[in-house]
Image (cartoon, rainbow, N blue to C red; front, side, top):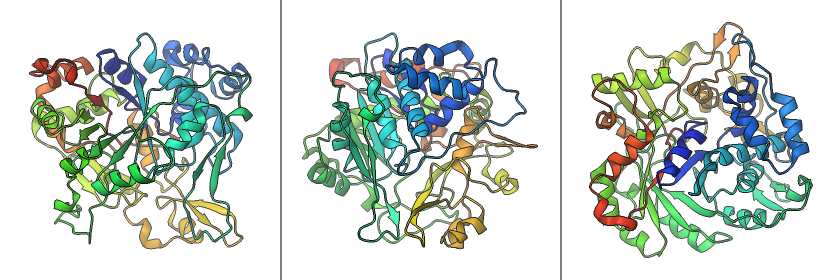
Length: 479
């Protein structure tokens, strides 16, 4: 999933077609703040904010970030503060409101379910963000890039406005250190509300072991799984066992990385297959293997409704037609240490080598790691920040080699690049291996196709299944 590639427009379009549209929950506070600084084109943010149940909080957020008419293109965006274990309150309020807005807009005008996807790796804004999405009535919460054992309990508590807690991994933490994040909804509520709908929780997994662990050890109900293979876009799970790399430095996956669907079926929970299932014959294959449906990302990422800029869509789709676009699994690009899919397009600004000339900076901080300082406090560091800064925080210099600032790059992908004097942040596109299979979705002339085109193509030949067919969608641009 990417930052606002799977935005409210795309999720709405997919849900209206009877499928499950899923919005990206990553960095929504940042996206929302920049939409307001751009002047709220179309007035969509204003319309959603007016429906937020706590008007005083909504007014604080609006007054802090909205620029009537929008900022000048040459002016930098004002940045929200980065989240920490304990807040700050203004960041949590921004997370609550922004997640509410995204889900509200995706749900507006229809009765079909909408989901939201979070990265377990990005824990700091998670509790407040989930509460905001639930205030808007989100139906599904999907979480991957980690082991979200405590998420079911979080959803249970938030649904009745009770305090929720979540563990924060802190490198070097000692016995007795407080490394638990806490969020108490009633400290933010301006009036009493009835209980919220508890959304279904779908864990994104890449192994049978993780699926079994979730069922046996999660602190609440797990409602199903997304089985995401290494051909999916964004972050991939590392290969199991001793790492092996091919001649291009890509991690090599083997039989141990294939989920045994027969064993998965024994858990008696619905599952959806993801990564390479964006073709009609693969949808049929998934259903024949007992899946409830498929999760499709790449085909939706480049459709008309997605949040990617038209420039990036056209560059990539031209490359697909010309046979010059390809996807590689970069083992070191992400500060998370997870392999990350990168679109390689010769001569394009999407080519990651442009980052050689980028000023090394980390000022958004979603992929930071928490660590114990020498004073016993919690500090934060990112392998994509300046090397001397990272090392001064106890990080190892070798961990910084090849790292890229995904946060700023993904904001640029959606037309919200930060301006730094004369330097404007450039995008870094990700995609699943299905990128080379997009030609059938394109019209005979031109490069513009819609979410409806994708759904109709994938549903082709499945009419005989009737209500037995259920598919899901999530744009795979970061997860």
